[in-house]
Length: 137
Image (cartoon, rainbow, N blue to C red):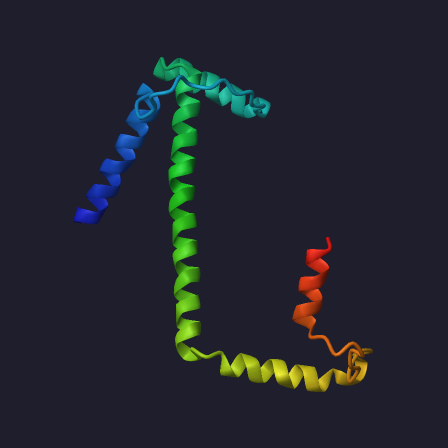
């Protein structure tokens, strides 16, 4: 078995052990109300009886495994997104292509813009107008 696979198996066993034994948490367990489908409740009852384990411990184990699996998936998704962003930024660090596309879109749609070509008669910049509005809010 590869070293990485052995580590994954060991980690999975540790998660299961903590969930079954209640380790890893210094706080008292918090009561929660859940609603199980009848077929899930029946299966949980049977497994609990067969393993001679409380249903609470089995539910904790199942939730711990789901959280562990989901956290790895989320981490992988986030890391993939970060890599995509880095690759995108590396291709065009000054965003020149994006700026060019923006300019082209503005020029192509200027006929539909009701404010195209209008000038503010006050001579005030938009930034100063915004600051003034914020100051009086």
